[in-house]
Length: 96
Image 1 (spheres, rainbow, N blue to C red):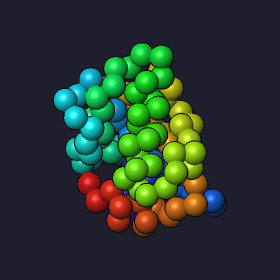
Image 2: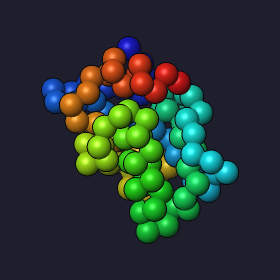
Image 3: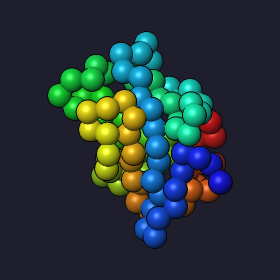
């Protein structure tokens, strides 16, 4: 099992570490027990949170409304819940 993924009954919880104001949006692999994501948006007024949800949804091939930020609204360390997928499906799609 991947340390950044936790299966739930109707989806999977993904632990991420976000680096805002990067030169491009990208997955950077694992950093400790979190998936590191670099995002171009600044960390103001929820811009990085919104882009994080969109970026993860796009990489997983699901709609943005199925990716829910559940913790870390004002932190670089976030937990996102992806509805309708398993940890195996997320791991295969992200392939960090």
